[in-house]
Length: 246
Ligand SMILES: C[S@@+](CC[C@H](N)C(=O)[O-])C[C@H]1O[C@@H](n2cnc3c(N)ncnc32)[C@H](O)[C@@H]1O
Image 1: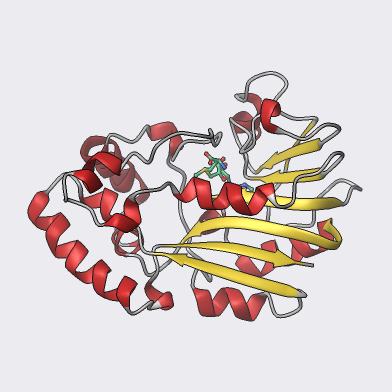
Image 2: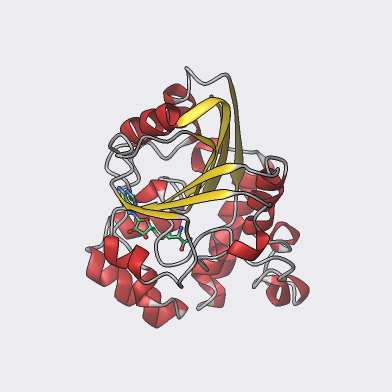
């Protein structure tokens, strides 16, 4: 997935939807659902912490409201250093599972495809809770631990997973970070978010793009995914969008 989230870009899968190879739920980007949630929170002077932002901030500087403070944090200082100049007001190399090592509070914490990489979801959510002001909101998108692609990747050594994703799916290898999938299910997330004042978890059933390299495999996978999508079996969702208010 692309780091900085550009607006007004059609879904990569749209051609496959039009040709009938993917169902209609693939006709928009997960990024757009994420941005819709974020847009509701944007106002002049908003203080944003982008967790696991790495080499490109999730919201590019040109899309931020006037007076916005934008802090980027990542466990890997080299990833932050690779971001274009002016990406962040402050860069903090820090592990999301640990208390934030700066004395600042935020109105919004956002995290795009990072929480499946952390060793402890409980510690990360508790660090986010502490770094938000009262009424502040966490908007986090993550992959589900019971998605077919997650189960496959968990069964493979990391290097083999990177090889498969670069050779079969054409992903860039510098985008591939080791995954942990700790508590990445609807039920586990809800249990850990018990102390937050408002919690919404939106499930997605969108793993088909991992199987586009083989039509028979894609068809078999979609027969399964269409069933769990129709029944809204949240435990098996491929991705979750968490919107939680402190
Ligand atoms: C898949 S990338 C996502 C980066 C960016 N948000 C994007 O959309 O491209 C995962 C990022 O999470 C960072 N990361 C992994 N574990 C982390 C942790 N425990 N704390 C903070 N960042 C972490 C990685 O260094 C990497 O930059």
